[in-house]
Amino acid sequence: MQLRTFLAKDMKDALSAMRAELGEEAIIVASEKMKDGTTLLRAGIEGTQNTAAASAEEIGRPTADASLAVGASHSFDARYREALVMRLRVPRSDDLRHPRPFDRGHLIGALHAHRTPDALGKAIVDAAEESGIPDLTLALAAALDRFMQAGPTAANDAAGTILLGLPGVGKTAVAAKLAAHHRLTGKHVVLAATDTQTAGQMARLEDFAVCLEVPLVVASTPEILSEEVYQARRTGEFLIVDGAGCDPRGPLSPELVRFLAVGRLQIAGVASAACDAEEASDLARALGKLGATKLIVTGLDLARRKGALVALACSGLGLEQVTASPYLADGFETLTSLTLSRTLLEEAPFGTAQKVA
Image (cartoon, rainbow, N blue to C red; front, side, top):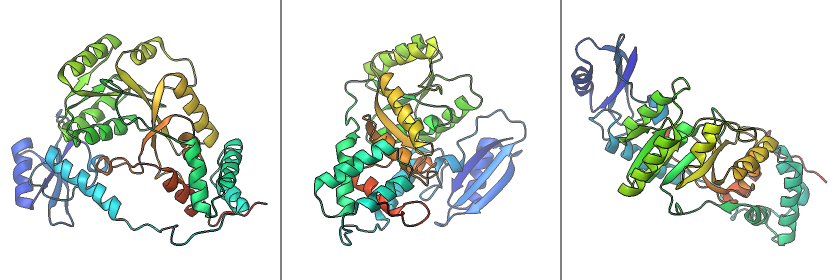
């Protein structure tokens, strides 16, 4: 059974929307009253071949203003903006009001607790000490700032971005989040799929495209992708290409090399913070050799130890965005040296970091 999700002001409107789209044979699978009073209804037809909309878990919890299906773009826009506002409203502890004196041993212990690579950790501690800043959080932030490189603010005349990374790292969700981000800045966006072989990959990207109301093209060959790039430049659209998963550290298939060689596309590496820190360093190095100019980090919500995040942030690639949520509506976050410093000192695994002499 292929499921559709409907969101309406009450059950009557939700049932009307369901019958209008699926007919009288529709089977209700689940219904839920949301906190804002709206009704969420999931239904389907046994054996239907209709493409299902992206699931509520992937899109993000619906919140407001919706007598339309979840796929409606302005309904998604409202949820996306509300998620951003909610993140800004979350109270944060202010290290500046409660300064901690610089302590080299404590800093070594915190970085070690996060499994930061030894050489990188020592370089960061040395830089923090050399800064001469008496506050531990600010000294660490100053040290990280020496190693971190901001992501490019413009597309450098590129027609779009192609995503490159390991299988399962979250490239498809990143492609959808990028599309949402650019749409809300007023850009016309096109999603492109190059992986037509992996089971479920196309269907998932199609669901996201329906949710965002952006066109989806299938670029199954480098020649087709090149034509799509040309069309995007001609029409002023921004092309976001969901590349096939690969290990950038090993030999690449000739076809993937040809995809990456398509002109006017920036290569963006996608890596997860929920991996070994040394592996993260190797991946970032390999992505840079393949021409990646920016990095998007996923899985912050899955990584208790942030050593991989430190390694990726200090890899020399421009850190474009990070994501700490699987929900599409939650979008991206920006990682600064100060926010990373606070994260490392406040979230040392298993309690207070052990002091190291």
